[in-house]
Structure formats: structure tokens, C-alpha cells
Amino acid sequence: MAKLYYRGMAEENGKPKVGRSARLLGVRPGIDIDVEQMPRNWLDENGYLRSEIDQNSSNETVAVAIRNTKGMSTSLSIEMSWIFSLSAECGKEQTAAEQFSGYFDRVSGILSNNNQSQCQTGIFQDIEDNWWCRVTPSGIGEVGIDTPETAYIMTEIGILLYQHLRFAPTFRYALVGL
Image 1 (cartoon, one colour):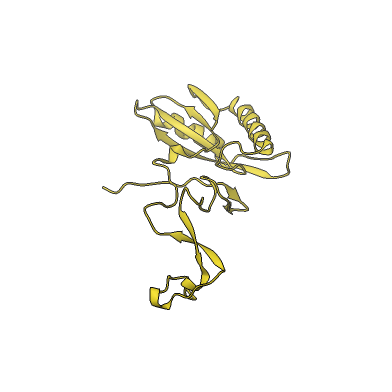
Image 2: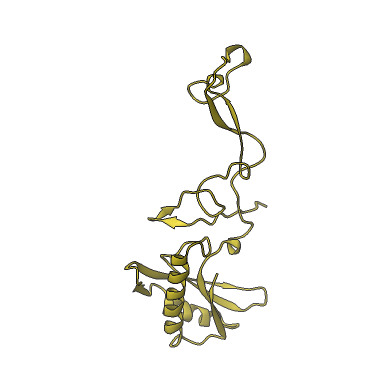
């Protein structure tokens, strides 16, 4: 049976945000990959290592990634990603979770930073056979709280979700956060 791995990344302009952390697109030298300095003339025009006979000495060095067992970081489950959401436990009936999902699906609002946030929903069943709905707003990264602005936007979205929750279909309990 195949084992699935997930990579949760922050978003920037609809694409993965580039950077050097576990939640950004890129690698962390010394953690995700090993890097060594070597003379530039030891590499051919494609970046491959020349044979020892063809290697020329050079004072100019370049950083090269070393091929080994390291690589891109992953999570063992999608739940390990830091996804800001509202999660509601709706009980034993799937229809309750479906109604809750329909109430929040595509709900949108304009935030104080003039960006629009729109909700997407999904339902799932836990190991105790309870049905849940997860409401995930757009416009917020998946790296946790990395700046004061992120904390403010998460708070603002959380308040909006709680306000909309007041008139939601039946559920047992709900929480907003990471």
C-alpha cells in the first residue's frame, strides 16, 4: 500500500511562497540538503561534476547540493499542516454535517486589508463515527502565525466566522484556530 505524504505551504499571489522554512517553497541548506563549496571549474556547463582528469583548479568557488538521503520536508498527514479553519462537530448524522457545510460554503467577506476571503468546506468522519465540517477561509497562509499582520487577519477572520456561526444549522460544538 502506498504511503501518502503532504507538504503544507504558505500562499503568495495564488502560488507557493518562496523562502527557507518548512512551510515555504524552497530548501534549507544543512537541514533539507547538504551544501559544499567546490571550485567552479570542477563543474561542466550543465552543473555536473567533471571527471578528475578534466577538473581544473580555480579560486572561484560555487555552492553545490550534495546528493544524499535528505530532501524536501513533508508531513505524514494533511492534518499536520497548520491550516486556519473553523471545525464543527455535528454528531452522528452525516446530513447534519452536510447542512452545516452548505451554510458556510462560498461565504465571503472583505477584510480590513481590502482582501476578499472566501470559505471552502469539507466534511469527514472521525474515529468515533462523529461527522465534522471543516470551514477553511482563503487569504490566510498555512504556516501558523508568522507576523503580527497574520495574527490580526486570523483574529479578524475568526470573529467573522464566529458571527456567521451564530445562525448556523445544528452542531454540537465548534472551534476556530490552527
